[in-house]
Image 1 (tube, helix red, strand yellow):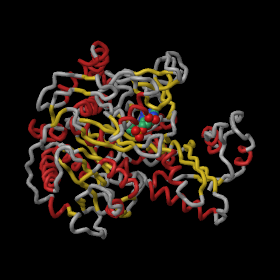
Image 2 (image 1 turned 90 degrees about the horizontal axis):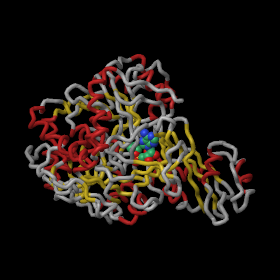
Image 3 (image 1 turned 180 degrees about the horizontal axis):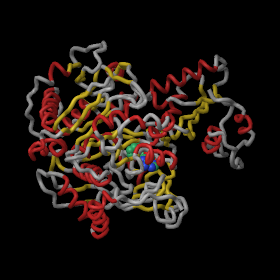
Length: 638
Ligand code: WT7
């Protein structure tokens, strides 16, 4: 039996209403979602149709309704008399801070929208956003939504090459960036990567709008580049939002898949906002008039889209956003921020919790964390040890922890306990949320109801589901809908325990999860084999105490490649950093004489993972040449 933690008294009032959500959704799933869409959003034109699944697997939710995402996230709160409520407390890395009320957001987002329009951006165009975490990034996303332009945020840690492929794939007309960003007390360039990306010459980009964050020197193209401070503050503060159909694409967000090329996951407006707002309100027990919410994710990831920009703002929440790293200038920075703003709801990732555990509990103990009420975790399965530490040291055994399972593709949380209802259980994400239908299947597609491990499948369409992969409908169908025809294959292993709670077991495909970030083995392999000295490469995700998984690469050299091996390994790491970004840099690179392959020539990653995790090698009988493993075993990682 796993240990459980009973729901606490103070959530009882909400618990009754939340129990009802499960029953309502059970009784009439589509009616339940329609009711949420009406209650949580303001529609310019009411919808009459709830779900249209005739074009499966492309869903249409609330298809004949019209609305604007930015209006829902900003204007209507001002109209309701909440203009003075703080939307964002911005904490910069250097300790300076600034407050943004909903009224201020409306004014400034309108100015950005007018600026983008003057640069030629129209409803339906794509805009790439390559900005540091901060209010400017949130406002720029909302400004795009305001004019009905589809944004594609590229995380500031991605390289010029990665940025280039995302800009061209999405067909962005404008890029919004900054001169640089602060990270660990240093100013790092961002615009330079945009220049490098656009130097390829094959992008549809007409203009680059550049916000000055660090004051560092930048190159300038008079025709193309526009300083933010020359145009935005001068722009009109009034702008009428463009009301768009519910299925209008709100954003594209690229994520790694099993092949080399990242997938542009497409989310639309009405269904996405409904489920982002619903989950944000109920999973975190949000009371917008009194809570101070903080999600530590960057807007470059889906968590920053759904649980910084859209969910909280649609709900009229007050939130903290922080620019920097948890250890700048000291390792108590996060806890200091919680104390400073009286944060009540705190949402972060297991990798960060494990890092803080390593630093020692005497650090958070120095701060007053008594404002906290609810804690959340996302990105990977949280190991019970980290869960218990989070619960005891940060939550003082008082705050329920919601372990939230979801994906870039699902748009919103699908599996999680609800505070006040679910007796929480360290390590388990527990239950499907109201309105979500899922199952665990075996390889043949038969449903598993006992405690055997299987594959997680979402059996019915949900409002915030992805509507496709930008420009590649075949890949959309193949990746998610072909394994079990008509049902969504998530790519995660899962099992039930004896209480019927769900435990996530990690990816079952060639996708790695490093610090809660998704990386593709194939994408890194294709960078490595570009090196003249490399004949073949295989990448695996090996267990890592802090980052969950770490990238480990095995490479075979070409005949005659007999240069300095340490220098080669450095070059390979640098290539990965240059082509993808620092997050993808292998922890270990092993130069090996052979790779273990089956008789049909498939690399046996399972064996490489055994090696990388220093485990005994499992069954090698299917190898074409079983002596290969002996050859590789003695080689040290670099
Ligand atoms: C993959 C999705 C969703 C935002 C962050 C990552 C893993 C995510 C959990 C969790 C177990 C989790 C899954 C999933 N994952 N949250 N609470 N428990 N696994 O989004 O980059 O799209 O990655 O992250 O493997 O498939 P993403």
